[in-house]
Image (cartoon, rainbow, N blue to C red; front, side, top):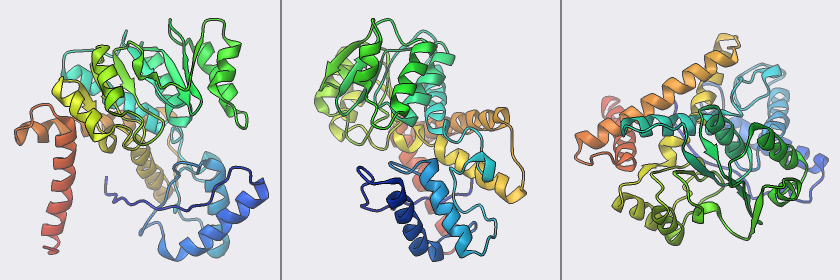
Length: 329
């Protein structure tokens, strides 16, 4: 997939702001950004605090500035006006597909595994949904107030109930805990002290520190797969590597969102819309290939099954080879 990458954003805090204020900020932000983006130049997507609503406000402003031209210049759009199916699910689904490939490479299967999921937003919800579909048992969700633990695992009905709670403005996982007679709420705690087989940090940066990493290792976790951006500290990663825990780094394991953004761009360019099955099938293929490339690079350069090293090497080689081929070095 011929995509580069970059990061940017703003220091605007939407908390406590009205919808009109949020919309006006998005429009002003796009007015400043528009000269620097385009379907063949740079294509932004959502991230923390930027969902379909904010994408809509920005895309509408971009079209006004372009006198109504349709260009696939933002991804994460609503499917009704140029978005792709499976885009909201993509990061969570993709992380699970990566985990499945990594576990199978070690002769293990995701079905039957007890999974810790942190966070309770988009990535966490769809990670859990796909884990349940593949036969795993999801034990936890969390937010800044604490962790909700279902000792026997969330059912599909309980997951739907938690999602309904979170879709309310300001909904907290503690509210779900009050609704479920089997749930335990761990006030102020992260999920990582609970015994499980696999972990999916899907909340925020540095949410697994050295002590959390030690707890995960002590509880017998065999794999940690990052759905958030850089959720594990270097000290925690070192613990995983020392104990042979399969570690899927964010730059590889949470690439599903970017992958489906690329598919959205392809659909926009062709003026077509793929069905959900097609997008999901392509996403599975992309995530399986990413794992394969990481594993192959790690083995080729003497790092065994270290997927973090493999992801770094594979990514570096792709950029370095392109620079060399195009005369930049």
